[in-house]
Amino acid sequence: MSSFSDSNLVKKFAELNTTQQSIQTLSLWLIHHRKHSKTIIQVWYRELEKAKPSKRLTFIYLANDVIQNSKKKGPEFSKDFAHILPDAFSQAAKDADDKMKASLGRVINIWRERGVYDKNFTKRLRQCCMLSDAPGATEHSAKPAKPAKAEPAAKSEPKKSKKNEQEFSLRQEIEAMGAQLPANVDAEDLVQRLSDLENSASCDASVRERIAALPPEVSDISVLDKIQDRDSAEKLSDKVDEAALILNEYNRRLVSELEERKKVARMLRSFILSQQKQVSETEKSLKDMKSKLEHVNSVRQELMSHIKNLPDLTLLPDVTGGLAPLPSAGDLFSLGNH
Image (cartoon, rainbow, N blue to C red; front, side):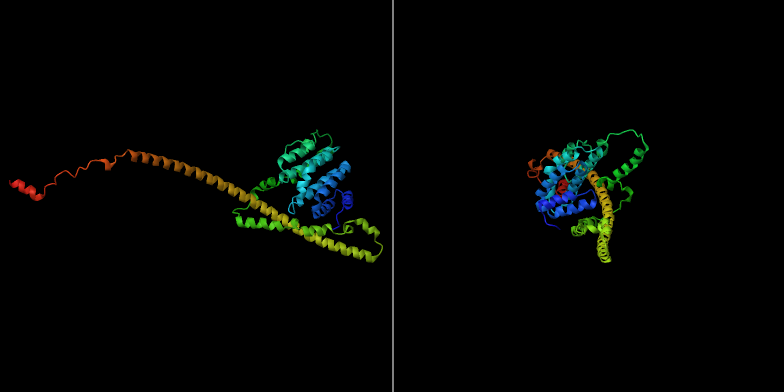
């Protein structure tokens, strides 16, 4: 990766565009230079202020990618960004249309749902964008409802609802799985699967850095117009083949990871439901045992009270010491003869 400098940083921000590749490539570069996080964020905010309204949202998307993907390497960015984000969202919302405000609201919702920032902080960010604080209401609050007058508006509605379906929180997605949940989830197996996900494709920073370091000509079709000879074409072909190999393998791993995460999500949901059932049964059992204990304690108290009311035999007089012994059978016969 290229070395860090203020001029190089400004240049990279200037080259930033709305494509996912551009955002992720710059995000990886910034995370790589996270020891300069304070400088990066200062320049980021300065360039956001100077940017056109349409590009300010891209700066917010970049911040989102950096904050979320840098968590495992250190908290520098999430902490340092927190100081400037209210001002940044105020700037981004300035002169923004309803669609852009809705996009800002979605970023805030993601941070709230995933615990990136707490409820009070995300509420403050929504206020900076002049959005309602109702979770999930971003799109509706940012844009007042209008009666459908033209056919294009009616056609765009299904696309909007489809997009909203894809923006369910993880909790909603898991709960929506319903009947697909597996039974009798083994706790050790679940823990092992969760541990394995720590080494999944999306956490493989080395491969992501290799992809970010791919030469720009492998994804720029305009380079073809500059090729003048066969040798240059073959060199470019080799680079493209190498890039395709890396990307195909990484995409295969991502697909596999996605399927595994869905399985783990179903297992987690099933395990949580089983634990909730056990908690309910244990609470019921505990209630029954408490009732029985109260009954036993009541009987015990009555028994102790009864014992206290019984006479103490040690305090009674000795009725056997002063009496003559009973006559024997011989004595009785002798008395009869007289």
